[in-house]
Length: 186
Image (tube, rainbow, N blue to C red; front, side):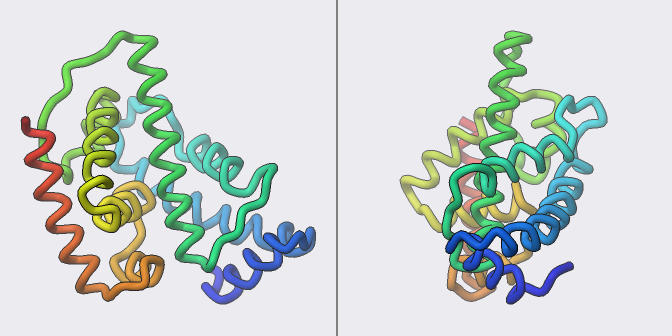
């Protein structure tokens, strides 16, 4: 795993237009994104049609392909990666649902979500809608869920990305999980 400082420096240089920084950055963030996506996809059903490599490629292209964006540091980049991975999964679920005309949304605990998301893309769409409502209520709690659930970041990594304590992240995670459970049980 690359040093956080190295990735932060390369992100800044890449945003400033350094082609060399972009070339050095690509394998560092790509490898970490593959690790995160693989960990997430291991929780999915073996029948899931989206592979972790495809998830990483799409997220990578959206984050670093074409138009360059500026990221404050490694944590900020991986927070953005979590958001993009979530959007890729939601887009995939929408496409699958449109193709299969699936449905049958089911209320369940957030911890059981990865398995259901693979089997029932409608669940992922329901989760996405609940996260949008959570963002209206508490944007930080939504970010915590997004970074933990979709990118697999640790409490310490999330705390660094958001500029809060790990204890605050733990509390936000617990409150957000409870709120999402109630919302999705309706």
